[in-house]
Structure formats: C-alpha cells, structure tokens
Length: 370
Ligand code: COA
Image 1 (spheres, protein in one colour):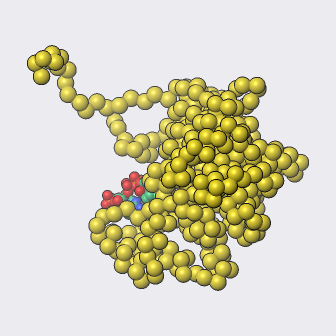
Image 2: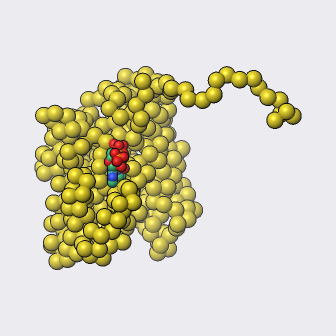
Image 3: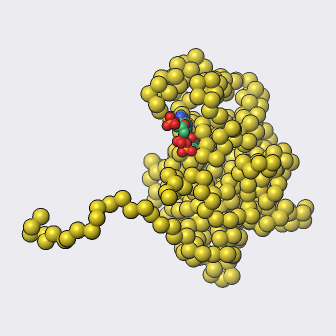
C-alpha cells in the first residue's frame, strides 16, 4: 500500500518531540511548548535539544559564552560570501555557508562532535547571512563578533548595527523557541535520511536547508508576507482572499499536515505580533493579517500555522522578508542536530520501497531502429 506524501505513516522512532499528541500537544523532550515559550530562552531550548536536558545556571552561562565565541565565520568563508551575487536568495547563502564551513571545519576531524558543529552553525549562520547582506548592500566588511550573548540579540545587532530593542529581541527569541523542533517534518526527515547513510552533519543540514526553503514548508513565512503585502487594507485583503479561494489557490500560512484543529505555536507568535504592532502605535499591517485569518476561518474553517503570524512578527522586527526562512534555519538547526545525533546513535539506512507504475519489461530497440 502506498501513502501519498507518507501521510499518517510512522517512519521511525524519536525521543525528541511530540507533535499534536493527545494529552501532550507539542513538547520538546517532554516540556510543553507553552511553558518553554513563556519561561525559557532559545539558548536553553537549543541546549535541551542538542544536549538532552535543560541546562542549570552554570551550564547555560557557559553555553552562551561558547556560542558567543563561535560567532565569527572563518576568513575563507567570508571570501566565498563576498563572491555570491546580491541577487542570491538568503537561503542559498546559508546553504552555501553551511557547505563551505563543512569543508573548513570537518565533521569528526580534531575530535569535533556533531553537537559542537551544531553550536557553531547556530552561532554563525546569522553572521554569515548578514556579512553577505551588508557587504552586498552597503559595501561594508562588518565585524561579526558582536559579543551579544543571545542568538536573537546577535542577529538584530548585525541587521541594524544598533542596540537591539528589548521587545523585538524577546519576540524574535520566542519565535526561535517555537521554530526549534517539530518531529518528522520534511526538512528534519531529509536530514535523517542523509545521516542514515553515515554522511556528515553538514551534508544533513545542507539537505535540510534545501527542504525547508520550499513554500509548502519553511518558505511559507516569506510567502505569507508577500501575499499580505499586496493588500493595503483589511477590506482589500478580504476581497483578494475570496478571489484566490474561488480560483482554488493556496493561501500560505494556513493548514498543516498534522495539526487539523490549529497549530499551538500560532496563538503564541500572534500575541507577540499584536503586542509589537500596538506598542509601535501602528496596527495597519497586523489588522490585515488578522482579517485574512478571519476570512480563512469563516470560508474554509482553516487555521493559521506558525508561519503566518511569524511573518507579521518578523516584519515588525524590521527583518527583510527574504530573511524570514533563514531565521527559521538558525533556530531549526538545533532540532535538526538533535535528530542527526539520535539517528546516528541507533542507525539503520533509510531506504523504503516504491510501487512501480511504469511499463512492463520490453525488448531493447536498437538506436538505428528508433
Ligand atoms: N489554502 C487553501 N486551501 C488549502 C490550504 C491552504 N493553505 N491548505 C490546504 N488546503 C486545502 C487543500 O487544497 C485541500 O482541498 P481539497 O480537499 O479540496 O483538495 C484540503 O485543504 C486538504 O489539504 P491537503 O493538501 O491534503 O493537506 P496536506 O496535509 O497535504 O498539506 C500543507 C499541508 C501545509 C502542505 C498545506 O496545508 C499547504 O500547502 N499550506 C500552505 C503552505 C504552508 O503554510 N506551509 C507551512 C506548513 S507549517
């Protein structure tokens, strides 16, 4: 029997997360997402995913220091980033950055562990992206060692070259917690397939970045922003969405393969988007997003997924639209790494079968007779 898109199929075992499990909802190593988003920080969550437990105060301080020391990409990598065109998609920049780092700081060499590589990628992905961005857009060769001891603060400082605003920093931090892990989604599964061949972690993360890029997966946050940007008022948005639905078009940021009654991360990120909009004194954009949400519920009974209001929140943080999915990469690298480590610890090559639908065996026809 085949299942289109492997829907509903249990394709392996994991102790990392539950997604929509009865009585549990979304949990990371048993901790509920609602508690993590309210009380923890992204660095705590990354540590939890990669090192299997919540850090104590001493461990967290040491971990944040380690991440801070890993912010600077090697000079050879910066040289490569300078060669990429200004028109490259930021996801291409991160995929390339991951590959180049993999050839400079190889997996397994010099006692380097997958966990240490994951930390290095999480700490330096923002640096790679913004080094390239500022070089291409402003001709600057920036110092990427900001000394900021949070991933959110580091990203915002490199983006704006200013002290990150506390509200934006915490909103971004919470979104990173929400994006960190989600069981056997497409990019994580891609990372596990690559790992199952005993390939290195950089190859697994590069493959995962490729999978995340598509608009049916992580690219939906960027696509949702592009969609909503076409509308200049809630009324125009309502009309536009009704027309799209009549034309049977997909509305990005809605629907989910697993959550059919709503994504628990969505309300959390929405509340941060609302708070930022209200505190900025301008809710125009937020109101358009909210109207789209209402129309989709009324017309299709469909809920937003995390990507929809993450787009609002990121826009209000001042992040360029094309960097929305790369921010997702920075966060999800923690979840991918947890899965790479788990897959390696109990590996079996992932190699399913296919139901053949091609022609029956037939005789080869000589080239001169075709
Ligand atoms: N907008 C409009 N209609 C949608 C929709 C959306 N975002 N998502 C699903 N539907 C419709 C489908 O067209 C289908 O309608 P039909 O039964 O009339 O053919 C029905 O809902 C079921 O959808 P299906 O494609 O079977 O769901 P899926 O589990 O394969 O897809 C997604 C899940 C996420 C790929 C899908 O909802 C989607 O494409 N969403 C938009 C992209 C997105 O936001 N991705 C981020 C996911 S976190």
